[in-house]
Image (cartoon, rainbow, N blue to C red; front, side):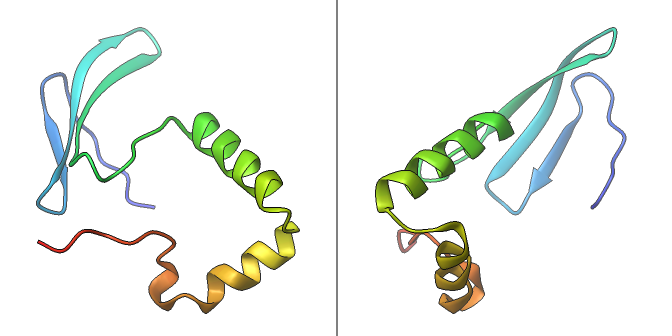
Length: 84
């Protein structure tokens, strides 16, 4: 894991298209602004995990089957990207 220090109004770039900016710092909470292309979903981790659980339940697959199916995709790409 890469760990970076940032102050208010400073930004981190992920690739050419994703910007994460420290918007505010209050006590032990940090507010982040995230700018990403619309085709890249951005969720809090707990929301992402809930979506994965719901998708897994809807698919009828067992967790080990999902893990095996994911391994078979090149570079672990679970979603397709639109060409530039």
